[in-house]
Image (cartoon, rainbow, N blue to C red):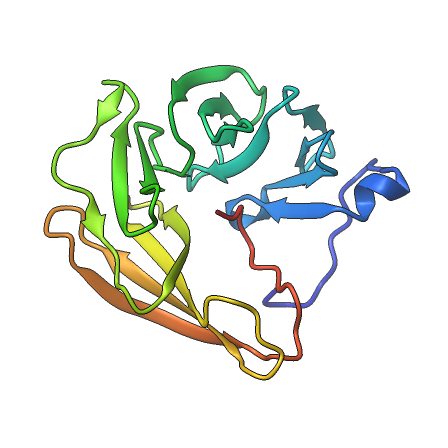
Length: 202
């Protein structure tokens, strides 16, 4: 993105059907997820090798170093997998954003009013109450950075409007106090439909 240069992944050829469907990126673009709703694959963008995601699962988030991937089933239950081998590393009852070390999954509550933290090793919710979300925007995404900070993306207005620009806002979430701090805001013009933002998306 910074140079505008195009890098071709070696030895990769996909069917027309697969090329025309969803494309998602892991952090730093190391892995690319290609899928058509029935056949999801994780492509290593450095060497061109790809792995087929187990049937019934959809890649949902990566750890910040992209070594681990969280995938969800139709009921949004999730498994944690090695990105390079797709070997299963753990199970969690809800999908969300996977922490850098793979020990915590941050997720929106069922009514999308708060953030919950699931402790993977202990198999239960983490300490403390769910973290309340700002009420004036709609939550769209959670992510962790390499240092273990949890970030929240929200959007306004809640629905695409051809006459109104869509405004995305990133917040840094304090996991102890529950306070959120503004980090960044960007607008997508109303002329743009279905924008693609790097990274897997809740």
